[in-house]
Amino acid sequence: MDIQDLTKLLHTQNSSKIVMMVADGIGGLPLEPGGKTELETAQTPNLDQLAQKGVSGLSIPVAPGITPGSGPGHLALFGYDPIQHPIGRGALEATGVGLELGNNDVAIRCNFCTLDSKRNILDRRAGRIASETSFKIVKRLQEIKIPGITIFVEPVKEHRFVVLFRGDGLGGDVDDTDPQQIGVPPLETKAHNECSKKTAAVAAQFIQQAEALLKDEEQANGLTMRGFSKRPNLPSYEEAYGLRAAAIAVYPMYKGLAQLAGMKIVGNAKTLEEQVAVLKDVWNDFDFFFLHFKYTDSTGEDGNFAEKVKRIEEFDQIIPQVSALSPDCLIITGDHSTPAYLKQHSWHPVPTLLVSDCCRTDRCKTFGENEALMGGLGQFKAKYLMALALANAGRLGKYGA
Image 1 (spheres, rainbow, N blue to C red):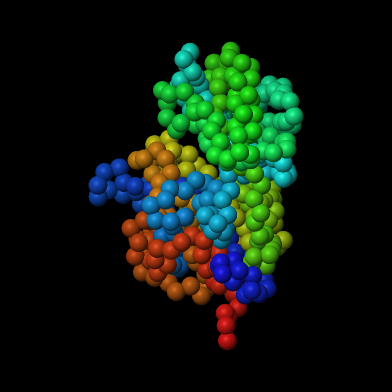
Image 2 (image 1 turned 180 degrees about the vertical axis):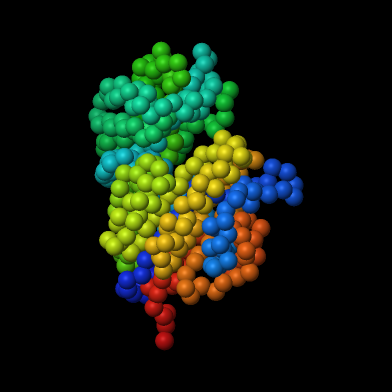
């Protein structure tokens, strides 16, 4: 029996409120042995104050040693086993920009990139081109036609866009074409089963036509494809937890994942301040609130330790406004670690903080990796975090006689 099978049996109704604030990729590493991580370096008086009131620990998104993508990382935070319920990034992006996935659809998250004359990648993100520029280029890609396939191409943000193929016999088991390094060409589309071979062939045709259309672009003259995926089947937050759930996010991918989990996307915030304003506006309409902050992750991926520290401090400054709403259970965590030292996601457990009137307070005085290692939550799988949230909000009944 999975943990969600238990929560379905045990969840009870009351008027309590749960807030989950996710600082994407918040976990980090010191730049030198014995140093401080980004979170430990940052001045976070508000998070530290909460750490003294709550209980801390380190969450493991998938399993020890396994580096998670953003999809599996968030899926675990939402209480779904990311191994049992794999979701490709394409499905998340497509749902996030308003595309509805059917049974005959395969969605792909794409990046514009910069190619040299030999088709080697110079910049995997095309210089993070401005969204208004990217959107115009995406519109040109909507001209691509492939017999027997309906194609949707929609912008996401900056260098990101999403492609959806609709047609009979398409599978989603196709490798990414992003080699995750520069100086080499994009990888070929490679399928792992018979039905996915058709998808791989369609994707190869799309890439060929796209590069012909983009050949005169200075930065975005190529593309890579990631996260080929079909629509997953997940029990909703209402089914699993008895919660009316709201998602307040800026980036479409996180909106998409929340929507696939049965949350309602609320507001159209562009900044953290605006996200909290939305939270206040809808406070009386929902039981659970997911608030996502992206920039602790992107600065880590850029290898910019100092900028990640600043973003953590920005996140800290908004905490009093959330605390003022008096949620019955407040969770501060991340979906994975993104150390600037590594310039990518990592397998390291994620600092996690839970505050409620009935939590068993530990001795942690600050919010950071080393303190969390000694916290009362210990090291635990992130998929159990929602059960902890429900229990601390008085929304789980007793199991057994």
